[in-house]
Length: 367
Ligand SMILES: *Cc1c(COP(=O)(O)O)cnc(C)c1O
Image (cartoon, rainbow, N blue to C red; front, side, top):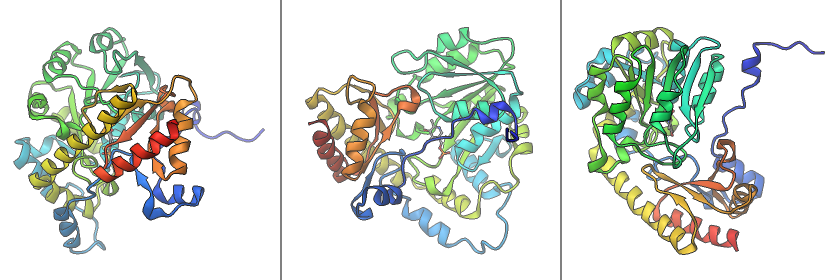
């Protein structure tokens, strides 16, 4: 028998399955890369903002290490959100923040709570540290916060809440989240993962950053990959009081956010026009997609993000089958069988013409 390296809990990890890259689909199906439509990774269909592109071009010298403390980017976040710089942890994507939280707060055998049909990184981050997952059954595809409170055990160290949730797009109003925070014992860290918060309509927006001052166990996580269009640069941030932030900063890599990402993020954070244009494009595209789902009689989960989960058949092979039929037509979406949703596909809202291409391909695939 060959030697087995590492602990069992590492060998048991099923690696993250991302959206297929365009180049891979082109090779695999013999298609022209330029004709492929990718609606698989909740990226901004506008790409990165011009303001960020310019800022990146001005990075003086990538021969030098980046600012490991992200002074200017933290100053930009302080100016925008009124949060003290020492409450901010920068991450190589917000994924980094999620993983740092698991590393900082969970020891092997201790439990972590998250919802069924919630973000795939929560089980991965938990398993990577040998934590024990307590997966709370979803209610209407979203978080059942009461059940998540009931799930708390003696050794629970961390709770992940995604709002809006990915891959289902469900949303919990701010007052319900705060009521939940009041009920969680203060020795348990709550990660409030708000990767899509900027897409929320005005009337649904809530000020989670203000809660950080009140709840020493709250870690708000934000991403620059979605509305800000910087997915390829890998940049996100966490906001929490010192008791949390100090630990995250001890274990993060000293230069976890590169110079280009820092420069681009500063520019993007100031680019309100790009954010509102992106949110509007998304709202219009969401209507475009869901109108067709309604016409076709397809069930979907009302979404607050830049994607929508749609049921493409009644049998457990449906998601994989329709996904393959779409791939052959050069349309990449996200199958969600790995989330326990084999009859569904997650579609990222694209440009109007990309949505049209998807719709045409879907109709053929279903026929
Ligand atoms: C996309 C996403 C993230 C992380 O994205 P990064 O690119 O690492 O910033 C985090 N949480 C949820 C729920 C997401 O959908």
